[in-house]
Length: 252
Image (cartoon, rainbow, N blue to C red; front, side, top):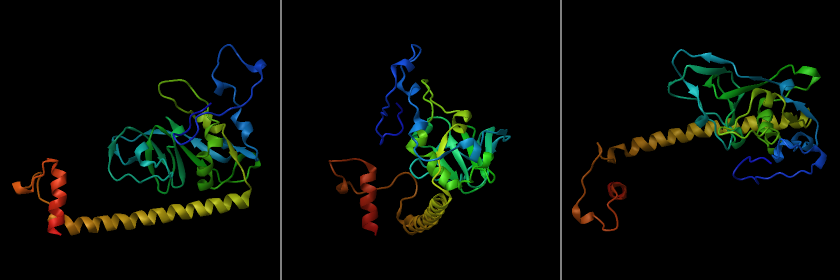
């Protein structure tokens, strides 16, 4: 059994011969062979990608990616804008997958479209240009999608602890589904295009928000307080927010 996501069914079932049961553990996940569920050809992650966790001393403040900058839904990584203190960081290059090693089952797995640094709680995964053992190269964006699928996530071992985590060797051993070079290339190209469109849309939206803020800035009271007439007060609420909206509406 493995719990992957609030939107997912928490239970996975698989028949196990009674002769395999051990008195040392009654944890069902210890007996589930998740890798055998993948019915297409697979590649071991270590053979097609470099899985690293090279922590460096950043000597103080640095712009670094934290868990909050990796979008759980889309896998996008937002570039940090402010310096944060952190002497232990990991350097990464563009198109590197950042895999949060704590509570990874809830999706802190994203791809960065920039060079930078991240917290040492991440493991970096970079697709190899020359895979080992004669494996076919894999695109970074296809690899990201594969790593976020249930059939791959449920291969991770479940460890009963107050802070569930995955280890580098756990990731190295993952079996990545391979769908053929033409299918993978199409998926990789399409996903890259979608991410680029999202990035451009975010720039446009941020520009609109900035323009909107500038347009209404003159209407917003300066300081932390503002005056209203007593006859405007409503018995149903004394929340200042309810009155500032009415004030803005009146000014417009």
